[in-house]
Amino acid sequence: MLINNYKKHFFTELSNLYPLTEIQSFFNILIEFKLNLSRVELALQPNLEFSKNEFDFFQEALSKLKKEIPIQYILGETEFFGLKLKVNNKVLIPRPETEELIEWVLKNSKLKTQNSKLNILDIGTGSGCIAISLAKNLPNAEVYAIDISSEAIKIAQKNAKINKVSVNFIETDILKIEELQYTFDIIVSNPPYVRELEKEKMHQNVLANEPHLALFVENNNPLLFYDKIADLAKSYLTKNGNLYFEINQYLGKETVDLLKLKGFNTIELKKDLFDVDRMIKATNTKS
Image 1: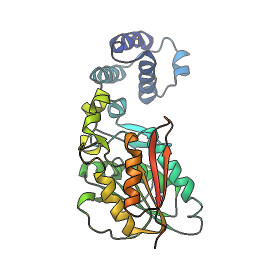
Image 2: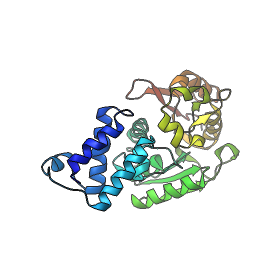
Image 3: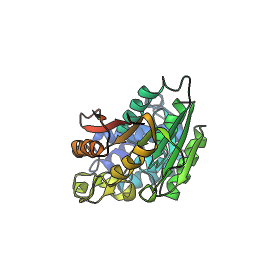
Image 4: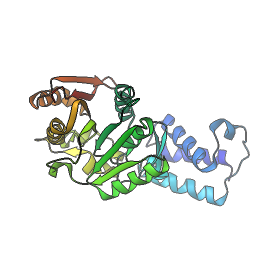
């Protein structure tokens, strides 16, 4: 079948589910992934035909898109902070907001690592996106990463190997940890923070496919993970070490107040590219 003819079918099948621009994006991503062709290269070859293998791949992808399975899970990979990462439904798909968090960490850390080594801990690592990005961009850092999910740890280990970085992955439940093995110059976390009451605002493709363990917290204790991690940070951050959080956009003030109660007095709340409260940095100014 001619690819251009199939494209019309592809658009028709998805037109009731997705905006036109998103369907176009899906098609371009799949063409580049399977045929290694850009949109321009495809346009210059109007009579190009699918092989049977290619046709079967697109049919399967189309079927999954009709079920609203995220394209990152269909391909089994995504790009994040300039890196290729494997993903499946055992880990969250990394978001652009988390790239902003990493940029913030790097901006405050690169000068420190020129002449000294940094110890970094990533809590709730998932695909390893934060830990691996930091390890790639801070070669003098020793990076540790924690997750409760053995399946997530497996994916994160693969991603570290693919991107040729060393990260010490640890499978454990942060809520049950009473002490850490080392002190850290940086502790960073993007923990579960979506309240159950916020489910109705979320897209169905997220609710049906991404791991709820990594997304949701109970309505009556939405800062559960921040509370626990802040306690550990007070004891295990070095003097002037920094704690970074990605946060629930609706709970910025509450998260700042929690950190103040824990004894942090240098706290910065930062908005993301969508102009909502999304990140916090707290500095351990006491030894």
